[in-house]
Length: 222
Image 1 (cartoon, one colour):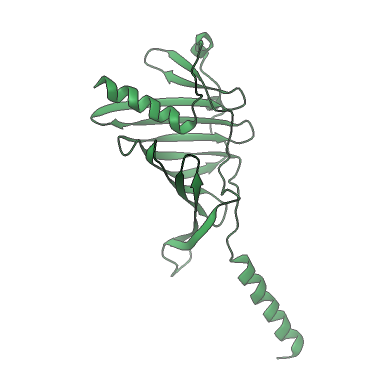
Image 2: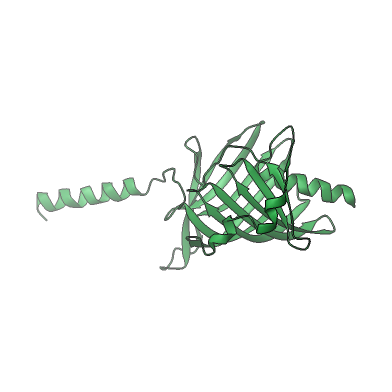
């Protein structure tokens, strides 16, 4: 082996080592997938679908689950640019229109997140047996903390676990992601929502507090 070949091999090894260092990333801007949620310290457990549009800053979540011993159906369309979200009730063909926090946070690894580690879900013994993922952690407002898991390739979100003293634990898992919007009408309010009047509140909701608020109301009705 001559010197040039040896230097070339060393250069390739250094490049591979540098490529293995996980970096903060942002997920694809248009995605459709499945989601499960456990929140309100375990009171809320649900599963459903999510449509995500980072360009238009819109999120549609349809979930069916349990609040304690009561069933819960949630269909929420969040329009961050318009600062509102809709709770859609198809059984009554009605909508509730409420204020939404103006901050849209894309699905991404925050710039200030810390790397906890990199692992393979499944097996690394053969191609296709596992998925390389990165686990990140950081702080949340209100003296809270979180961990999140993203795939190394594609920056696809997998799980989010957050805790704050006021909200307790929230665990969100996503799966079966498809790049793109499978049904563009998911991000348009149904026709009967045009009659909905904006309900005023002192504090606008976020996508997490909206779910928790609905859980509290259902819990109080039991």
